[in-house]
Image (tube, rainbow, N blue to C red; front, top):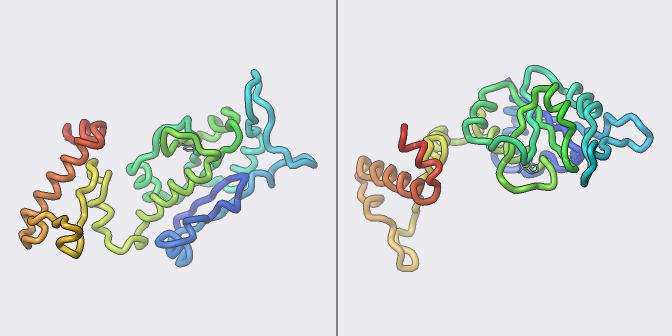
Length: 228
Ligand code: ADE
């Protein structure tokens, strides 16, 4: 079954963007997943194709109208979850990516302007997600980020299935460092244990490096992993 992504945006030309390349692009061509992009402006009803209005209560910027957004969602809605990309959302995680990949697909609403009328977010039961604590000029790049992380988890997209379970975050730890030839480069030697051919010792070294790096760089992740 094809995993389906529907994107609602005021900037449809931003898709598939980077997802038309590399692993995701190949998988799109071979039908592992599909992408349809809907221009929210197509659901405006006035001569000027207006989609937004000034915020009640005053303040800067414009707000996307609930009736327009609702009609756009209606045009693609089915059993799939509806995600709204916003810096006000909960942080998207690898666990979210896996959960979406395990489902039938996703509908993504990309906000622009100051925001989207909260009533349509609530009435549609949208999941508000953020990709980090910084403000993008719209949800489009965030939607591309989510889709990239999800699509690579779909069966048949990545070459070696092992690399998905060993990499950063699936274990709750950051990944150990990697090395390849030459064994010595600019006076820097690859750690001896990796040249030893001793698989047990290599595995132990990698585990210890993962733990050290997680402790140093991400004490928040380490606090969770150390309690498991
Ligand atoms: N739209 C604007 N900024 C965003 C962010 N950080 N995450 C998700 N959507 C956004």
